[in-house]
Length: 78
Image 1 (cartoon, one colour):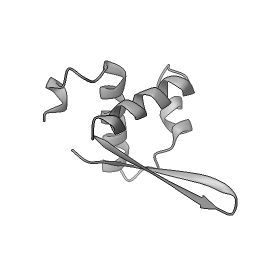
Image 2 (image 1 turned 90 degrees about the horizontal axis):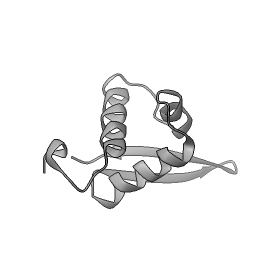
Image 3 (image 1 turned 135 degrees about the vertical axis):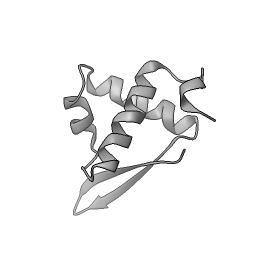
């Protein structure tokens, strides 16, 4: 499905999708703080937008514990 036409997603989630896509295409690290710093939204809004993308099959969130610190990676699927 074309994300532009997916009416199940909020504009917030669509904006996050394209921000993640931009960062990936430019070999930049994608983290929640980086996403929050690129927008005027807060951490909670970032989390809900990422959850929307995950729930609708646009994003896979991988969590790894590295030396007691959780590190998240975000992979776009569509």
